[in-house]
Length: 139
Length: 75
Image 1 (tube, chains in turn blue, yellow):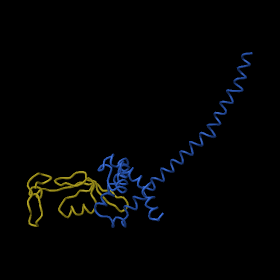
Image 2 (tube, chains in turn yellow, blue):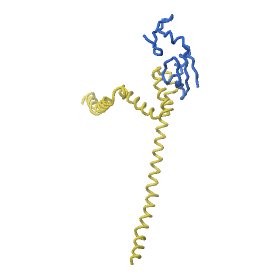
Image 3 (cartoon, one colour):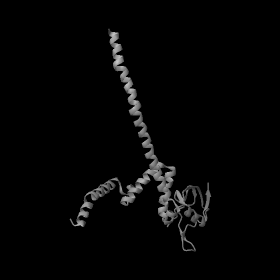
Image 4 (cartoon, chains in turn orange, brown):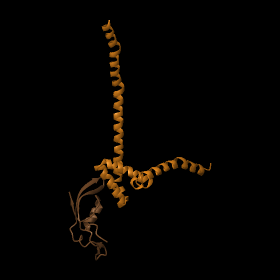
């Protein structure tokens, strides 16, 4: 009787459970992981292509002719970091973006002031700009 | 005013420029390796003898250095 009950349990619960698990992995988990892998890879690739294109434009003769010596040096440091030290390149890019946006680098400002300026800028954009627009429109 | 390289007193030469009497007599040499990215050409300095330069040097800066009498070796 106990052996019969054991066979019943195996046939009705264990085997369907294992089969379902297998099917779940085959049809849900595997395709999801595959799609995520492909999408992530494509995004990374697109990011790298974008960086390469930007550097290509920056280092073309047409653009270099317009740059001053200091600006050329800045591009040179960026290119050297891109070719030899990608970690430094990323930090330089961040610094340059901050410099372009605020006018100061993170090192020269300090983290506190940078955060204050950043938050202040966001608040200005969010509250002051619409108010100015409204007042200009004459509402 | 003292020289950045040898700390000796600077003097004014016949062209009216500040120059170091010790370093101007020494042989200045620069060993560099070249890199190119698209149209930008630059050099990284490996060794610099009796001269102070940045770690990375532009092509035009190197040309100016050669004109001033610096011996440049490209690896």
